[in-house]
Length: 60
Image 1: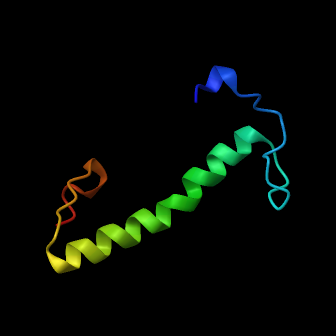
Image 2: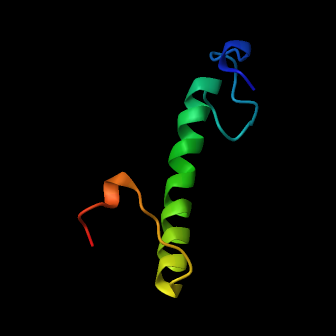
């Protein structure tokens, strides 16, 4: 989906989310952040993966 094709002031499309499409984009990003952090923490604890994000450099 291209942002140019999305009506950003239209309703979110979900009756339980009373805001527009632009706010929905931010809501989705904010929603997945803790899930991503939890997965990285769990996989890192198992030694399965190493996440080399810029924000994590120097924290080890």
